[in-house]
Length: 352
Length: 212
Image (cartoon, rainbow over all chains, first blue to last red; front, side, top):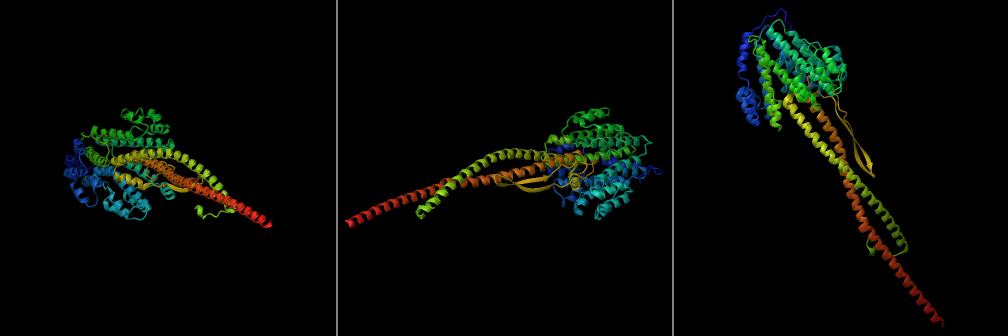
């Protein structure tokens, strides 16, 4: 499914033209400032007048308030992504499918967690975001299965994934999903990188972007573990290979440091160290650092967004912006509904 | 006990004296218990005050963290992470004695679960959710300790009230009534003694007159 050899190049011109049309509907940066001054019903109305009307109308009977906004925006995003995936062909389709497999993994986790906790199938179905390659019907079939083991088997069959037997054995022994989830995350990045043919400049840019993302994820993971006192080899288990700047040696140096302050030395050579230095000094919380890392990573996308108009780059750029839009709408709506200070909400927003 | 209900006999007087002695020693002990409980109450109250402040601050922090996590990651992600949790806190409610009064002793196994054993993936679960989870674990710990202290404080208050009522009853009712009864019996016995003496003198005089 993800092999790139012997594949047709793909309909770049057509897919990019479709995406360009969709991109014009995205919110401008000042839309969030306007939304910050609105009430929840006003936000619902504002977004329904800005391209989310179908989903808002469809879900009004099921949800209300902030839940309606969250589910409608996710459903809208899933529709967009699915639409792009459906119209793309050849290697472009394969690359996009590999990028969007993140949502398949997300949905699988939602199903597994719901199943292991004993949540009713309807509630699990409501929480799905079918933005990946797997259709909603396939996900629903997985929800209908009896056990976690059956769900994993069905997913592996659909996506041709092989979960190592020792991970499955560990799950059978303790019933904890941690190892399976971590394997799925690593496998997602492995497949994604494998699906990208770095022979052209645009795909090399995409590859760099994904490898930067791996760096960001690895750094967050190592620091999260460090705060919990998990260091060294134990922490290295969770490192995703093939990062751009954080190679195995750097990761080992960061993992070996006992505290975040000690790890700062190992991070000093990273190109984005200047951006995260101040956030690293905040020893009490990692959220500031995570927020900065996310913004640094997104800003990298800005550097290549206008290059290579007939490549995968404009499509990925649209997907990034769409996801940011959905996340920002939710952040504003939920922040306002929970009474968060407007300045705090503004800091949480990602504006590219 | 009404004075008029008392039979003025020597055995009743002895019984009254015994009861007065017992009541006075009971009164002394109860007063000491009341004072002890009050001292204990003030100590617990100080702890409860601090605990309430901790509950408030921990609750505010936990709510702030969960609000931010839900805003950034979405309710679905937060809910989903919560479903993955495998660790459950266990609470055992026992009891301990403070000056003979039984108060609850809450023993809870709230050892904070490590990120590795929580049940969700380490890589994909964001720091926002992790920090919210930690803040709620801390809140739960504080709540359990606060529950123990608050219940102890309420039990202490009830016990102080009860002891105070007993001390007052002994001081202002039981002991004065017993003392009054004792005084009455003593007075009646003396009276009877005097009557007896006069009667004897009268009989003696009558006997002497008859002999003459």
